[in-house]
Length: 298
Ligand code: CP
Image (cartoon, rainbow, N blue to C red; front, side, top):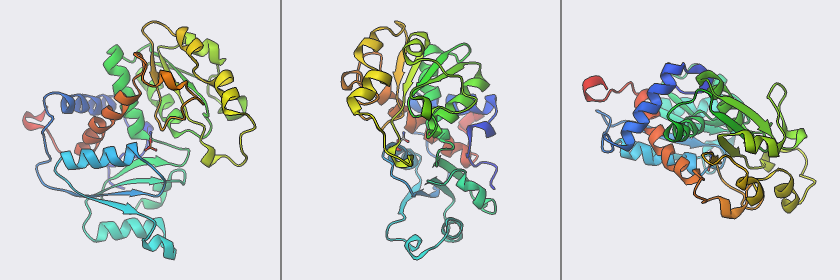
């Protein structure tokens, strides 16, 4: 496996995370037009649906001067039974220099240890979503200027969420605190649990999660309206957030299920800011994958 791959947050040190966030911030201010010193050929391989991750990677790659191909399993030799490894090895063999991959299998990248080009994990099953976590961290850092003692409440379908897992690892590494809330059957063992009302009042960062129906073996036995009242961010609950607290959501949002639709663009919501930050973080991750440096080694 290429050492410049990004597979899981836990593979990064605190300094590496802070380095990626620093580069992402520079991309947002003084280095908006910076491009890689050589044009690179990259492909985005999405075996699961995506809007934000897929197209913010594509945006980042184009902005960095890459040549970009977007692979769809539909219409490819995956439909003839080709394995993930053989698909990825093919992209490597025909000249691609880095791959962004989303796949429904937890830690799919374990099958790709012989691949030499950098792989950037754009989400594996219910396992990891490192670039989503990094853009969440950037959004928190822009707000509070630190991670130490920042309290994050992650509420909803925790057990099927790669975002919850990645953020727990990151916040613990960086000195923040994480609690988890939502329906008991969707909590994870070893994750500190707090009642939803208490969590919302306790937190500096309230992250709401979508119910990941596509990963559920059985359908939810609760109406959308009941879910919102019992576990969602209603206007009444939002009014009890700390005055400085912010709302995050990795999106896509199911309006009026996990969050009242009117709160999605409330003054303390950073949901669309997260998406803009996604491009900056992904530029930083691609820069890292190619071992590129800003002029002057900044
Ligand atoms: N947050 C996120 O991963 O969104 P997409 O599934 O649209 O990429």
